[in-house]
Length: 300
Length: 306
Figure (spheres, rainbow over the protein chains, first blue to last red):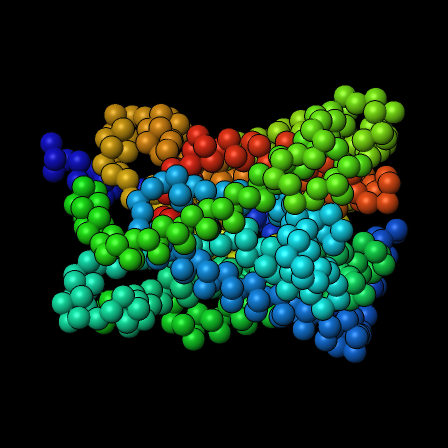
């Protein structure tokens, strides 16, 4: 009987015809809403697009040349970089701290649920809560600062708006990132710690020379995900500063959407999108190489 | 490693010295407070009177308690009452927006998960030439940033005449999610396929095997995935804003909140109304966390170890 089963399994012919109906919806989704739009996006970036007639006029590299000369180009780059560096820097350090706390001091699922909660709340709502908490006149934070006899802070001023928004999103994402790192901590075998403890390492030393190096693959993975997401920041700015004051928070996605929907210049906006995508690919690739995401020190 | 064994090993990691314990718990308490306070502040503000918020901006209790904020966003307050409390007469229809969000998020979740599961079946259980190559294209799609597809997909939905419809918002996401396919394929590959072989020998067709065997086996994973997709759709803003904000019948909650905030009836936003609305939009997520917290936490941890 078992021999018969084995031969039957080996003889099983290709399931291709069966597979087709199973994957038709997904394939249509892939082709119609990812592949074709992807190609169309690239074509648009080399064209002038008339929103009203739908006419596409090929104009070579005109959009790209214009982009590199646009004052917004350098500004969006600087502003987006400022956001990403503050956001990722604080988020990763704080999340690492929370992850270690979760790992060393509690096994409570309630605590994990609490730190994850902000991640479940929409960017839009999070932005509004903090816009209100940080309001100059009536916000709770400035009321406390005022009652301590200090100068109130204009959190959404030209200088502070971008750091403020970056920190708001740190608040939303720190618990999520902490859980990703926590999983990595759990994967470190216990005997590694025991050996370090026997050798008489202090908590900080063990963390620095044992935990952190072993955590590198997970940190690399977390950084690739969070950096690519961070570059596409939109919601928080769209419902608070809308790119302002002046152009202090005019990140790429805000600039792209303004060119497209504000100025009806979909061709130009597409060129910026293509540039952003290339930039993101380069960054993700460089990160993976630099941090050698696929290699754990445990495997060596 | 067996689960029991693993947990025992973990418990020995917990710090033992009193000093370390105090430090750890004080830090954790502060982190939990920083997390929860802003959410509490939504409630506190939502139950306040906008016009009188300036009186005690640092009071932990609502300033001049009223449910007026909630009444305003739900369209239950009279115009005079709304204006007296610092709100606006021109209210946004939150009831409709809430319903739109429910329909949209549910629709996307159900269809996307079902279609993705079917595709994952074709990429795992079924054997055919070129299977892994086709799957690879989906993995590449996973890495395409959303912002890049925003403009061409917007133009596509417009060309299809689906602007300002819930279908237009849902369409690009309804047929599949590369992440869902990837996630479920991993799970299907890990299940014991001899049961599928046995069913085939017994003469069962693949659709029967899919619905009666593979789907029930993967149900916990499918539910978890569904919850994550629901949360994502519920919270989405950028796409529904550009595709659906032109008509109340396709305005979702996040977009409605944005519109509500931009109305500044008496010089500044109607904070009590805005926070009441934000809280209403956040409550389903808080409930999900209460009922499925363990599962959500678990799935995010699982994505961390790959």
